[in-house]
Image (cartoon, rainbow, N blue to C red; front, side, top):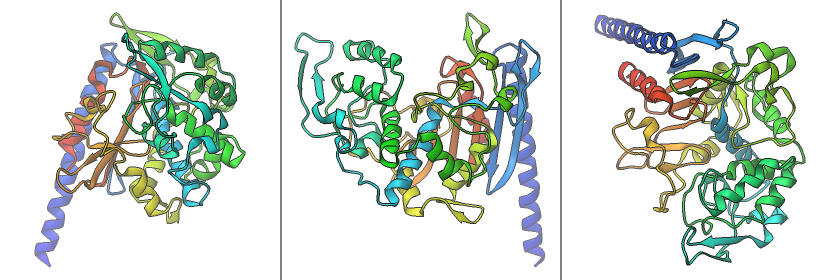
Length: 403
């Protein structure tokens, strides 16, 4: 009995020591970044085994008005939207509303006559027919053949037309006239497919993506500050966004005039959500616990397993690096692949999911580590992406101090 007592006491002391070191090192990094004008402010969150080890805010949400960052500040989470949209679609899947390998054109008729451009940027460039239809599975895992719009080539330039789309139908009508970059299923390439997945959800349930996700996740998970726009009463909670240019922070989006104050005409399931650290922690806890939150089953365990398992193992051709730069210093092994809305780390031999992660263009980032029962969240509002390696530095400190 005494041995057990002293063992537990030792574990408690070591845990307190690691927690203190974690705070000390994160405080040092974040305060230094703010004081040197590299970071306007941020919120950091670390939870292990259902215990919050660290939840702090640093700097300012509005430098110009000297408004301090707070833990409940609302952030534009950009691409971190993807896992939420994917989870929403999978909820419909578990209800039998569609099959993963059904052709998307069954629900989106604009995709009946898609074409593919071969040998982009060469003299042998030509447009050909699809070898097979795009499936719903392809939308989930970025293998549909679409691009993201940032490519500096013929198709990338054509994607500029999508910026003027005012409705989902406008978007679908336009993108269906642009050739695919790749044959469906042949290549993993980061794309706008999660946005299209959001439109697919709307067609299946005849509701807006915002209303559906609110009913499915935001209300039952207590995500009271999450959605595709910011309520007027919460204007002061929305952080300014900044661009770091020529060594200085420059205001990019002011909450008082932000587009996020308006109800959008297009709900972007690939990058349109705003949220807070606590709201996101609730969602990630549900994913960490295989669909359960506060004793309530939000998603089936098998559905979460589908969400977090590698879906591109057989696909060797990948258009961009697997975003390993985000966590290359956090893990000693490479990313195995991509699931439904998330990047996947697996064990070297067994292929078991060790952790999932993703990041957003404003340098927002999350990690769910199943081995360590760990959730980490880093939220700021700065471009360009990978600003001064701040996400990696955050991940390194957490990895060093949480075991």
